[in-house]
Length: 306
Image 1 (cartoon, rainbow, N blue to C red):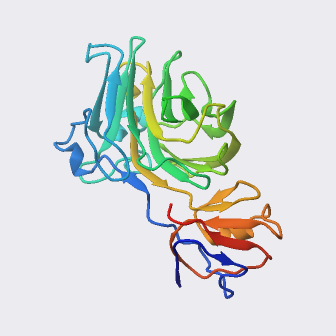
Image 2: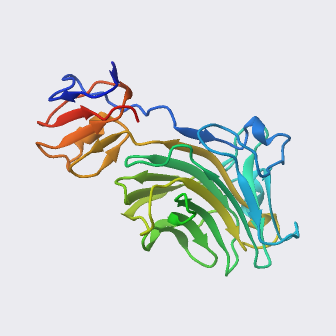
């Protein structure tokens, strides 16, 4: 059943009943894909483009004025697969129509970057998803993305370094992800578990192999307010092109005031082993769909509009 929360309220128990088998995700706070009409005609990607919703326009930058050394485009993400091709015929990170993804290329010591802001900065419990597809990365090159604060300071990065064996998740310290190199794309899901900690899950699209790591964000002021994509000297030719697609961001809206842990929905906040008797769960105004089982003596309060 939908539960509407607005303004301030205090509940010892909200709904008692049969728990839903699967928690429903709220509508995305922000979303975009390279197949959006904002990137027409096909191949076009430039500063000021603003597809999807919930984010500001892209700002694209390069370190060299020579377009043969760095740049941006919209194209087919399978072109960097080399001799192996698209082995599972899934189109890598492309979306339709037109087999499209955002592409960045860089060589000769240069860097191509793409940055945009989130209209609503991250709160604890926020979930961010992006699909990344690198090709070959030469020694000395690095490709990936960063979640940053409004002052353009990195809080969390996910990247691959040329010559390495696996992807790195870098908050306050670099952590090997446990996911090995692939030319056919990875799905990356970042959950902001508290205001200063994260959980990152990387999954290879070619075979479904994945792993989850967790840690603390870098010691820069929060919150996360921007996204930066970067290709730093991956190498020449289409085999070293870097692609991204399918951005989704869900803003956290439920907070355990005692632990600082955030969630997208009420039930996970109650079920979390870290939630103990007597804790207070603050719920942002909105509509929450699903049956909720209150199994602990906790206070659930409305946080008002947010």
